[in-house]
Length: 472
Image (cartoon, helix red, strand yellow):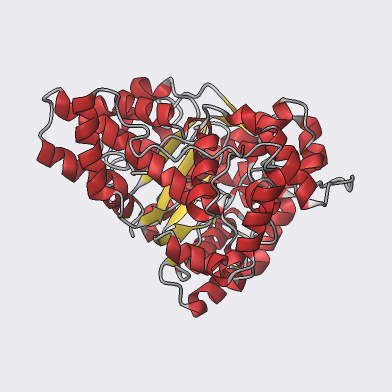
């Protein structure tokens, strides 16, 4: 007998207590149909520029999603066997059905994880799959999803509209020409797809090809990036180029939260050292810290929201970095000091009322001890939602509990899905909305806020805080 996938519980992630669950259900009904705002993510803008069909289920679900393949790697599956591209020229599995079968054979590994919630939601709600994914159903589900992908209503722009996405921001290198974004604007989507300025390749002296990237920045802008002043002006020029194409934010993925506030001469000397390729690790970290302060100064000038993703030892595996390159799931949380590290930048611009700096961390221990108190007093600081490993029902609830008492919700930036997996976007926002409503329901049940306040706060957490934080 063919096993049927259990329907998604309409009360999933709501409290078990009947009274509190009823409150959460009522709150969720008021915001469930609001449009999706995705102000930070990693979807490929070419999807929407070209509107070509997605090639196959494996390349839609598995190959781009490090949440999926890191779990399989932990159980001995090779990245190459999952079709993940290599940078060293080694062999890679190219048969999408074989990739899908390997995924299905290991799908049980995701029991109890948010990834399981997202994939089940996408298979059921987007593709109408009604059987559980397992080895015996792998081919049938592959064929069903593959058949859907050949239809016009499953092309990227159609799904964008079906998902009720009002805005989606991509993350783009400072050296990107943004040609795809120009084509998207000409296409006239029902919502907006905008770029985000990510300058790490031309800011981090330890990034491969740093000097060449800085030179390329100069060619793109006509600025003399061999000089400190010209280098800064080149960043201002590229930021303006991004803003002209709709960008409202920058993004910075540094290993630490270190900031510096050097005088111009000291900063120029440090820049020359880094450009020469002779900088020590300490000097490279100092330069990254100086550039965070410079980027914050520029945000005061041009109004762009600044996102800082800290506390991640990125690309932890040297062998994987050499064989497959960056962003292959080997980001590991680091202990992070925000109080001392951010002080030079905050002494420089932290009291600017129109500056918005959104802080993300993989070090949850800092949420109540450092981040909530900082955001609870500095007008420039906002707390970003739980990121990477903590984008989960438990992580979202912990975040609300650890930060709500000190920073409230109005010093936070709502939710963003931070994903490369396009079809998981509705599921991720659904999880966040449900958990937020569960948290608010607890406050109502405890008599700490009224139902009318909870309803307003649910709307703020869903869309309103995002619009304010990102200047939308």
